[in-house]
Image (cartoon, rainbow, N blue to C red; front, top):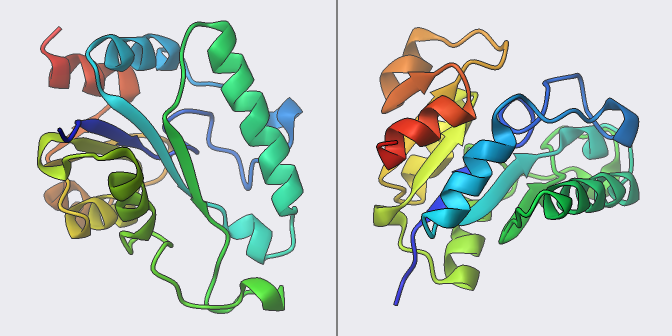
Length: 184
């Protein structure tokens, strides 16, 4: 039986948007994130983080740096009673300075590859799921993967009229979005 999921972008949605966050000391969860994740967990939603990590392709940090920060995120959440079902990331860029990451791929948002991978691996019903991001590319990836509802939060990125029109709603933060989706 397929399950529903909340697909959540990382930078600007879960944590403070800072240029290429990769160090634990620069990683700060946004207000309300723990409560939002707890509510999703209690409501039976799979929690899947989908994040582009172009800083790897740009040579600003390594995949090992990314993995350390991801382990820190998981452990910080675990201590608060929250788990994530999956964290998918894309380290690629078509014009990457680091040759091994230089390619167009199916996983870099706005492409749906990260979402499709999680959908298959976790038996997720995209038509019963939703996505929360902070850029048009997040919404485009969700739509391409068949995710029923795609929302944006205001992270500090200017949202274009196109992004706002493409989204099913725009919220101040993850918690306000989750409250609305869950009706509580």
